[in-house]
Amino acid sequence: IDPDDFIAHWTLGRIYFTEGKLEQALDLFRRVAEIKPSFYAGHLDVAQTCTGLGRDEEAASVYRRLLEIMPNYLLQNPDDARARLIYASKLGWAGRKEEAIREGTKALVLSPGDPVMLYNAACMYVGLGESIRAIDALRQAVEAGYTNFGWMQNDPDLVPLRDDPAFVEMLRDLSSRPTAPSATKRRMVEVEDEIERTGQATDVVDVEADGAGDSDFGGTGGEAQLAGQRE
Image 1 (tube, rainbow, N blue to C red):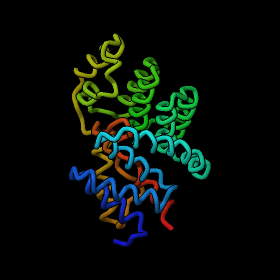
Image 2 (cartoon, rainbow, N blue to C red):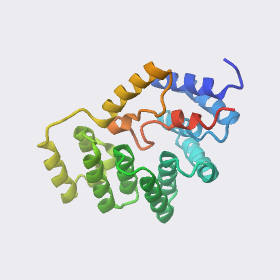
Image 3 (tube, rainbow, N blue to C red):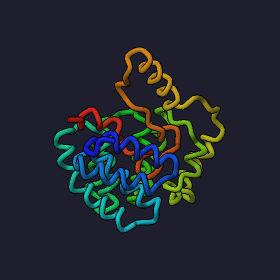
Image 4 (spheres, rainbow, N blue to C red):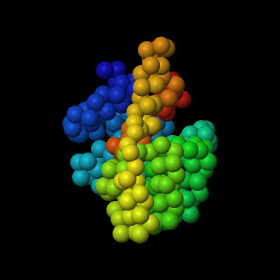
């Protein structure tokens, strides 16, 4: 592996992470952050891997570093809604609630009707103690095509809502609905077809639309960021 190829390190790190080889993944993600400090996905992967290894202090240090990196990235990429929502989430983590809400709102304006963004925004609002906003975002996510109601019911990010009458009522209503292929599964088919035709995809598939995400948005958005990061 080329010692200066951050994409190769990042790709191999994601493979190791998927296989549960967190120590090996962490070494690679740390190298990614060294080679390409502006690649925010690399820093997120370091933090998530540290959390998986129980190294919370290092994860917190990386999140603080992200709060330094993200403003400059967003100045250069103001339309990157996913990055903006990640930034909003970390602002909330740092206790900067008003800034978090402002950035989260901007992210949703940039991605109207996106079920992934709406669901993730709901998780962010829960962390900020904004239950009304969270439930409204969840309703909008469902209207936009989110269908994994089982995940919604058991998502640890939504635990604070479980005794909220509005959330309980919403889940009761959703449980009676027939299930259908999620927007993500449909998008996966579209991307596979696109790759077969052109050899590349113009967008990435986000697993969290189908409910397989976490508080860091079901992955770090690195595939989308790579388009503007390769030198």
